[in-house]
Image (cartoon, rainbow, N blue to C red; front, side, top):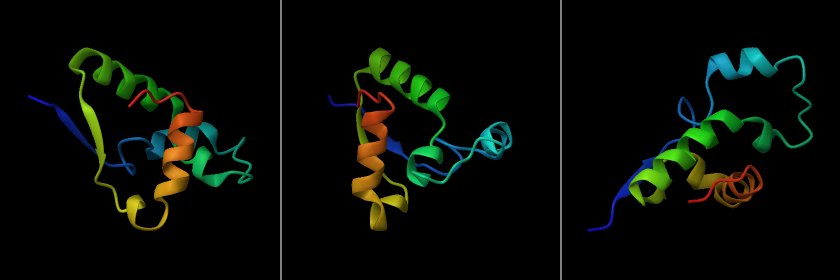
Length: 80
């Protein structure tokens, strides 16, 4: 049986705590990349490794920002 992670972005791959940590370094050169917490990617990767789950993007980001989201996830090392 295939395991699936229905992945949201806001509140899952980023948070107000994350934005508070990076607000002084937020450059907006690649705001999609800056909107994803690299620590959240590490946690996601750990879940994927442990469960062998596949990712389905359920976030509203998929409607207008899907290609950018996939690019950023790959650049940040997401293995899913």
